[in-house]
Length: 429
View 1 (cartoon, one colour):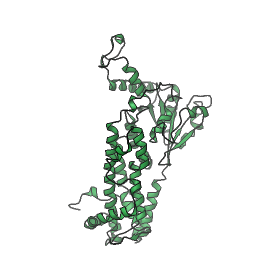
View 2 (view 1 turned 45 degrees about the horizontal axis):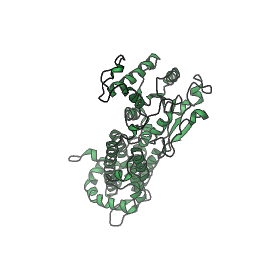
View 3 (view 1 turned 90 degrees about the vertical axis):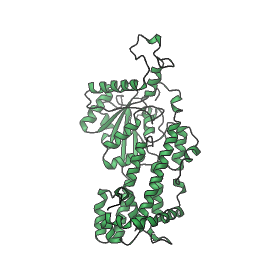
C-alpha cells in the first residue's frame, strides 16, 4: 500500500461484511451486490422516535418543528397550542425522512395525564429519548418525570427554551453602551451587560434546581424560539449523535438540519462509509455495460445515490427554498455558491459523463483498491467498474459537501433578521 493514501480507499461497514463475504466466497458477485443493496435499503427504514414534553406555552411546538428542520410558519409545521386542547400525543414525521418521528406529548400534571400514570399513558418504551422543555424553571412534574426516566434507563435531555426573551428583558436594565442604568444600581446585576454571563446563570440555575431534585448529571440546553442555530441547539444535536446507538445515530444525523459545519462534516463522513456499498450494489444488480467504457453498472441506482447525497446535504430545490425562507434570502443567492448539480439536475447522461471522467483514474487505482478488498478482488480483479463507480461517487460527494458548507456560510452571514423580530412572552406557546 506504499504511496497510497488509505483515506482515499473505500470503507465497508463491519456489520455488512459477513453476508457479503459469504456470497463473494462462493464466487457470486451478483448475490454480494444484492446483499449490499439490501444493507443500503435498510438504512432508510431505521426507526427513530423522539418524545417532546413540557407544559403548555413552554415552546414545545417550536422545538418539534426545529428538530424537523422547519419553522413555525412552514407547511407541515406543528400548530401552536393544539395538543393541549386535544390532550393527545401527536406524531410529526420528518418531512424528508418519515422513519424519524417526533411526538409532541401532552403536558404532565393535567387532570388527564397525572404524574403517576403519565409514562404508561404515553407508552414511554416506544421512544429512543425524551426532551423535557421549559421556558422558566423546571417544575416538580418535570423533575419527577426525569427521575422515573432515570430509573427506567431512558435517555432524556432538558431544554430551556426562549432564552432570547430572557436576554431581551435583561438588556432593558442597561443603556445603549451596555452599562447598568442608574435606576437599576440597587439591583444585584453586573455593571456591564454580558450575554454569556446571563446564559451561564440561566443554565446554572436550572442545573442547581434539577440536582436538588435528585436528577443525576442533568444536561440543560439553552435554545431560542426564533433562531435554532444559536445558543445550545447545535451542541444538543452533537450530544444526541454521540449518545445514540450507531443505527439510531445514523437516522438522526440524516434528518438534522444543517445548522453547523460540524453537522455537515458528520454527514459527509457517514455518507463516505456507504460509497463502497453503493459501488458494489451498482456493479452487479441489473447492471448494463456503458458504451465506450469497460464499465458495467446500474445507472438508475447511481442516479439514486447522487440524489440521496443531495437530499442528505440539503442540495435540492425544496430544501433550498425552505432554507431561503427561513434565512429571509432569495433562493438565487444560495444557488449562486453551488457548483455541483442539484438533485433535480441529475440525469442518466450526467451519471455517464461523470463515470467517463473517472474511468481513467480508476484504472490507475484498481490494483490498490482490490488489494485493499481482496475478497471482492478475487472475483472481479480484471474489471474497472467498482473503482470507477467508487471514485465517481466519492468525487461527487466531496463537491456536494463543499457546496453545502458554502450555502451554510451564506445563511450565517446574514442570519440576523429573526433575532430582530418582536419576541412573544413566555405564555405564548
